[in-house]
Amino acid sequence: MRAVIQRVSRAQVRVAGQVIGEIGKGLLLLLGVGRGDSNKEADSLLEKVIHLRIFEDAEGKMNLSLLDVSGELMVISQFTLYADCRKGRRPSFTDASSPSEAKALYDYFITGAKSRGLHVSSGTFQALMEVELVNFGPVTILLDSSKDF
Image (tube, rainbow, N blue to C red; front, side):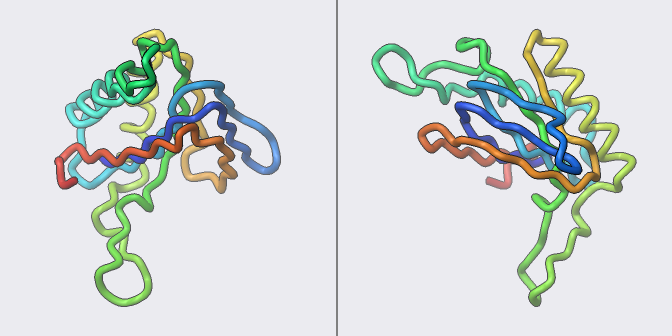
């Protein structure tokens, strides 16, 4: 699994012009599911995300996690995180999971986040979405469950 995490002061997602999810202070997570990913990768990535110390403490040092600041989480599916652009001009998505497997892990990830007491918003899987955010910092972190980066 791959994730792009952005620390936000607010974010919202719209489908067909309608707001379907929004958060205040927290993290916007773009989540890509790769071929061969399982619940194990989802659990590991979720633990990393919610405990990642990227919020500032009283001294201004990034020392607090999403849980520490009672932050909110927005999860948006994004298979394009598995785009391979090394050859030619059209990205290949052969490393992305099939839609049915990806949806199952996307839903599993969201359920896991909610079970940890987080306020979680999400997009609509495979929908054309408009995601609006205010990146606070800015802070943007890339994570990969196979630790490729």
